[in-house]
Length: 78
Image (cartoon, rainbow, N blue to C red; front, top):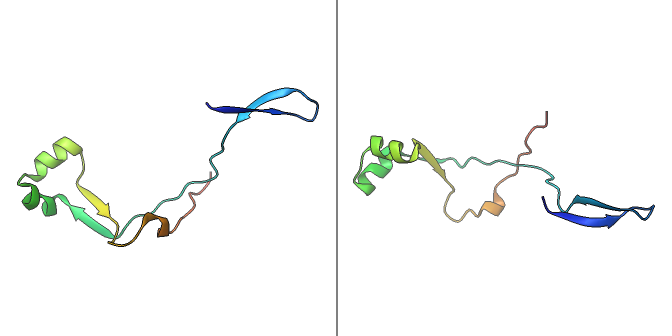
């Protein structure tokens, strides 16, 4: 872990984290692309795609939609 040295009010040096994870977010784009859409483009089968990647479908952001504009939904804390 990366640490930064700091000095406490008593003058003692201590190690503390250099950064802190403040939160997490998630976004699920509405456009879903399944293996059937890729089979014709790639000239392969669903079975081959799944066996090599383990993926049955994937999501794609709309054109012109930079990820910086995706809404952030806080992950619930437990």
